[in-house]
Image 1 (cartoon, rainbow, N blue to C red):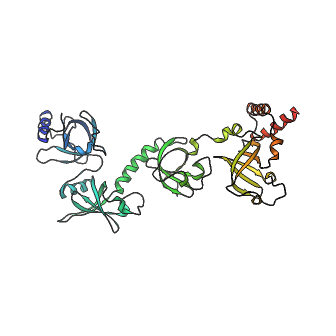
Image 2: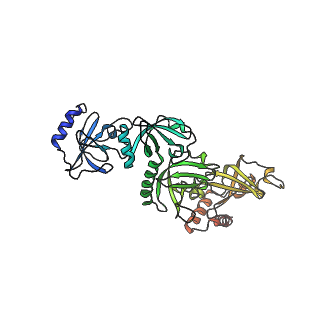
Image 3: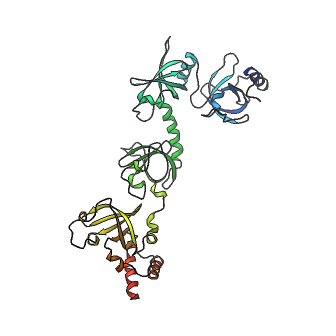
Length: 404
């Protein structure tokens, strides 16, 4: 059937194929499902079963680009929003807001608690002005979104679904609407679905909602979890904004779920991005063999030595005695500063304690490096014996002494 066929022809064909019946007819506000039997330029017709039929605005069946997302024969879910008094046909709308026309229909939507569509026309004191079916309505700032919105002007020109919270009739009806009520209903439904699959170790996709000094908050579907700054990456992160931004989609792993308590109305959900990556320490023995010369960046200074970042998530420690100053020093700051690039020799790798011992003394390289066969044999021995992570240095020394 062509989309260009006029409404009257479609209605006639639909009436002939599906005669009206009043018995058992769905009530206004009921959610119903039916089969699309005809699609025209302005309206589509839905067979709701043997007892009733309905008419649906064609806009409901189109996506954001204006393309039809359904075809004749598709089963769709919809909402009964009214009834055509002339034809007796049920009027259908989306499960989101329906486009109502006139004061009577808007009042009916208020009485039934049905959502309506409205367009934000202006930001005013204390909220925004919304046009609903040609009627001016007011949406308080606290009701335009679930979260606090600093600049309400960003909503001007946008169309949303609202619930009418106050209706005073007359020549100029007084309407107060809430978008927050719609969003909270959707959030509750999403939360129920998310809880069904929420277990420790589950991998979920979420959206970053806010960034704090200590971490990032992520909406994982009606529920909000937090990624502590230490769980953002294996490398050093000074602030979450270095790796994330609000609105970004991220894949996260659920680390822990703390159930609601006396103080907490909702469960606390600890998330991690880091848990989904490969631990760089798994490759530390191969990446930083004892005796090799490596480069890194000085991260921080302590009275006892210097921490050097060799790779994201891998730090090494240069003891104050290994700074290669050639003299006695009181503090590492006499030799290096944070941010300096340095060349160092690997003295030992302790996987269990996640430590790599380094030396900035160039003379130490000749003292530490054994021949390649000794290094390979010692690494193989350490892995095969699954020795404690701190014993690799001892094994290497024993192997070197044996070969002398």
